[in-house]
Image 1 (cartoon, helix red, strand yellow):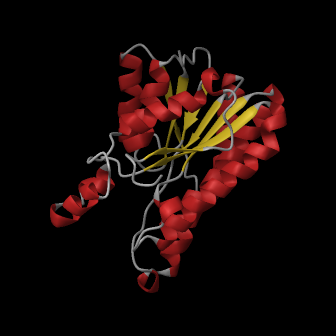
Image 2 (cartoon, helix red, strand yellow):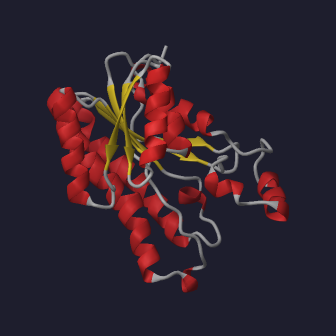
Image 3 (cartoon, one colour):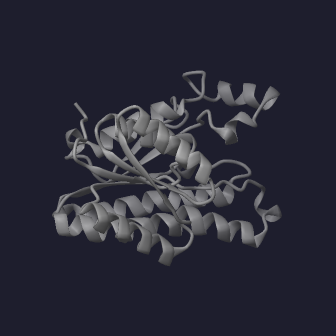
Length: 248
């Protein structure tokens, strides 16, 4: 179940956190995984080497999703090289926190350039190949705060809400080509960003989660694997919440 043998998957922001766990999980199910990175070349190489060492297939692909032209060129080239691109996981994202009146304009612009424009550019390039094949899976990473909002995360929450709107629109646009488009909205996950939350802030955070703990990256990756699989062929336009009950 959930096997991906013969499929080619691209994971943006695949060098760490949820992206890394997703790349590893997709490879375990038989997919050839293209691990994108913007600056973390060494980390991406570690992910690829680990997958290959375990008998999987993976390669690196460097580009910044905020650069639309570079993104579309890189993805088109990868799809041509492999002769297909079955799965896109648009995971690359940044969070620049701060109350709205304290946020710099360049912080807002960078957040949307990566989280929204990056998702659009990645999807545009992937969809061209998927349309010709008349099949494909596009999976965006949103966030619990894209639905619930959060103090000090106006720009980030707005960008992740935009990803949900993008998901639903593309699901309608490409359903006739047998391409499904879904989003995964994680709650708090044990990543570099959440590890910085300690003390009373962390205690308050855990109290806000009915399951009483943060998620592992692997738990989010498992949800992504499901949406990428043939078993999810009738699921499109959905937001799969992996948040421990924070938002229902």
